[in-house]
Image 1 (cartoon, chains in turn orange, yellow):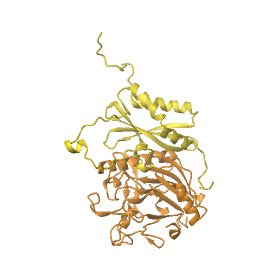
Image 2 (cartoon, chains in turn purple, cyan):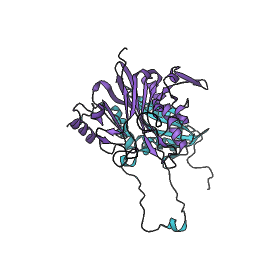
Image 3 (cartoon, rainbow over the protein chains, first blue to last red):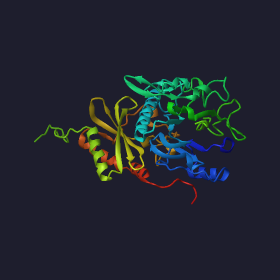
Length: 251
Length: 162
């Protein structure tokens, strides 16, 4: 997947292959420039990078969150890698509570680092339309760029920063690519498709976000079953997402 | 002579978990010469109880890691329980974990119904002195020590080459 997408940064969540093996494979198959940026925790997220320019050193390690410094052109951004509580082992209330706690962590880290330019990326185990993803005290994330132009909204006298969630644009069968990133028709997946894998962008860095795609191929290898669902036997029960970020040339 | 006064209670010792954590915060500041700091974050637990999340911060690099959290009921500082964030890891990342396998033979509970089991939570503190002891224990866990060392470590990026 990395050669076909030409990705500069690779992030894997709960990767069963060790980070050393993964790094060796990236260095042998793609580029010797790949390295694993400085990290505090060895556990949930494996992050690899092709250029030191991006930094990506870990500045916060929680059990399901890892926050990294990310340099995009002249912008110093915080990239939060997230793995929400899973649907099979946690009820909706617990998963909502995790998202609220994530939002609270983001406020703390942002304050500690003196940076409000945040990008969240990962498997949230929540759909963009779920209440806590939109709630002011939750992730406060909106469907369109225009929705976040007012920068924040007030709830009980407190200002909460707005986030843009571009994953809304990829739902259903009237867009390019699959209808979601995961397919499940059990009682935990009543809509069939879910969009658990998301990128969410703070209003201050919306202009740095260029595109997000759900990938169904890794080079010549299909990641889909014949029905077009993620092929968990061959790769994963989630489709990966490819996020394009960059500084605008006219800046 | 019989004594009806509960053992282990000191009426002069009524510090709440937050007050004890504040003392820990000062101790860290002094003990590390200002290099390490404890951050206390107020939030709510999954069932809505008040929760204080304890983070360690390496001041020179501004790097932060979550250590554990303390949960109690609203308006009642005790009992308080210490929850390690790292219990939440997937099984394949834990050094040891419990696995349930199907047995060929039926267990007693399958034949006669459920059997009550007494589960002990070693991280619950009922009094300030118990909380101090458990707080000291949690800071001395191997997993917590690793986090602190990782935070302080200035090792350069992993290039994967030897």
